[in-house]
Amino acid sequence: MHSSRGGEVVIAEDITLGLHIIAGFAALFAGAGAFVTKKGGYRHRRLGRVYVGSMAFVSASALALFVFDPNPSRQFLGLVAVFSFYFVFSGYRVLSRKRVTDSPAFVDWAATVLLVGAGVGLSAFGVTQLLSGAGFGTVMLVFGGIALGFGGNDIQQFRRGVSDPRAWFYGHLSRMAGGYIATVTAFSSVNFTFLPSVISWLWPTIIGTPLIFLLVRRYRTQFESRTVSS
View 1 (cartoon, rainbow, N blue to C red):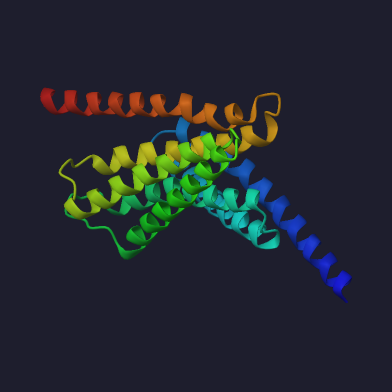
View 2: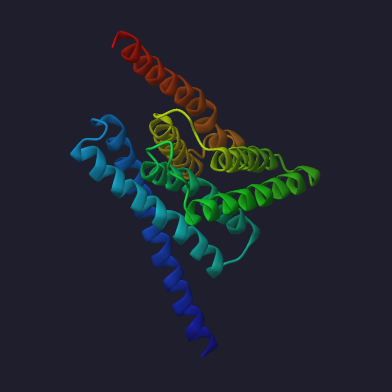
């Protein structure tokens, strides 16, 4: 009876892992498609929904895999799943707050609190790993610091509000792009085994973060120039 149940659990775990991988590829391609299509257009919105849904499944299945096998590595991946999906979730939710008078809902606050919790967990993992001599703790500390930084910033923004009428656009763009960095990171960590582990996990963040900053600055400049010319 025990072995039969164990076999069923293994099958369920394998199915979950397979669906997790499929959803990851769907997010990878849908995210790229949403980025290159016209912003606000039909294809952009459809691909965006596929991207958000795929990332939601990736994160949920990562947590399910931890339940199947609660080892430290999957606990780390579970925290990363919360961290990754927050960018996509917050990038989607900001579309409901396009007016400066719009206030965050309870779900926005709850998600931010979860992000801060994930940041604390990742940071604690990182410190523990580094103290034990494992260089991978650097990855955990970087992700934990990013989570705590964004979580703290969002809490402050929720409390004081925003004054820029285009804040929702910049938030949507940067958060969706941040979520896509997480998608590329997951792909890299699994497939780019020729790279050192720390590099395979961090290169998308190192390259992608400055690109997001430059992209947002570019749009700010465009919007400001239109305002001045009008």
